[in-house]
Length: 543
Ligand SMILES: O=P(O)(O)OC[C@H]1O[C@](O)(CO)[C@@H](O)[C@@H]1O
Image (cartoon, rainbow, N blue to C red; front, side, top):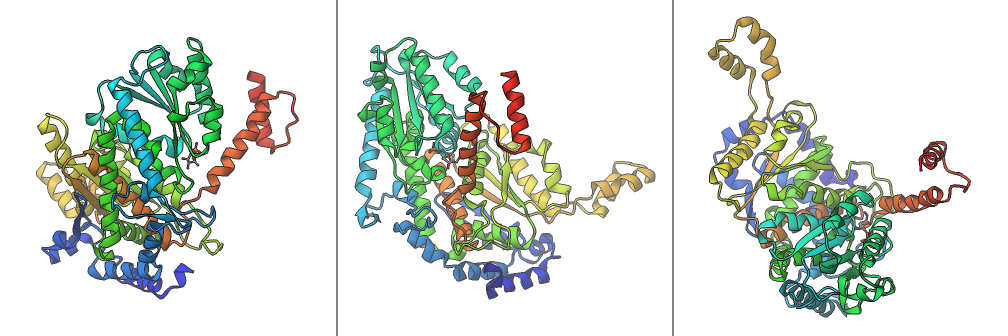
């Protein structure tokens, strides 16, 4: 068990020795702390100096990573070993962004030729749609794409195309529908013309209730003006379930394959990224893949103590397991990155929200944290209060491009000032003496100072990372997403869990289907628990 390793015990002792050290004193003692605790990779600079760490902390954490065979397991993942043991699958989203020219084998078969063929299929499809060569059933060029999918088959394309808004192709508007809530689909379709709308269904399994219902309803909308024979022009599908796609009437040429060794939340690099490629053009999509490849190379080659995803992972372990943090907040200071917390939420929480080890034992330590956050500066006027002054430790990741895609330069200066100012405030805080001096200077009465000063004290000593890069272009975005993927991977290895299954989600899907059958058949006997029976009865009455 992880907690019995000598490396774990040493970290516990180390925490006991340095838990009361204020980060301010670490900066005072070391004028080169920023240089020593920052590193660059794939066009990104990570400043991790504002953390509760010394050289010894990093060295002990790296020992823990080594004891858990992080480097060995990383190499197994990249080379197609069956590391998703509960589903008996390799984990090869990295092969989808492999540009090394080297083969990648699964069960003795090189998967790169199939990946390259699918990339080519995507490129040709995207280009023929954007040039207008590929047309809708009535002979008009496409103006809109409706992408239907959920979870990993939705968040990646949606959030990446939002992040890359400045790179969007003008001639095509890409819309996303995930929720089975009919209001969303209705609102999206309301403004569209079926003749010029391309519907792309993305589903690894093509069995997901929400996606099937939304696709069926979109088809019904389409068939109000077109015929079944027209489906082949206006519908496309990405799935491992080619047969089901064909049964639906989708033209073979418009079906894009994927493979069981790509997890849903890691699938934006596969043909699941088709709506993203349609939104930003294939060349930009390829840059996105190349950015991830660059980060992967860093992850594979850099020593662990200079390895950006490893450092982020180890800091996360330090806070989650030794310093009592339950959550991790992501604060992108860039409007186009506002969806990042939701994306990383799925990536991290669906991967590491587990409590059974690879040896089938219940864990006796905390695993994946709660991931949350929103764009800066908005959060400063809302939840930052709790980060600054509550008793709960919440490590922060600040993320910001240095050069915005916007002419309003003063705005970016203000954004950057707030970003840096927040991490400074979290780390330094303000002492009672500083508060009293400021209040006295502002001519506050002794009574006011007495009653208010303790409320204004900020203890500081709150940890944060700051991740900066020049521009949020497709390549950098690819590197950024791969950085978090590999961070989550390293943490899963150390926690000795399988980051690549999601059995908890599967149960929800199965029960959702069962309850649906009870809602649609008003006469069926209700045999569920009392609460669920009561809710279903009430729903049936109001239907
Ligand atoms: O792509 P599918 O098969 O429709 O599944 C959708 C999503 O469901 C999940 O299993 C859970 O939400 C995700 O991992 C997956 O991306």
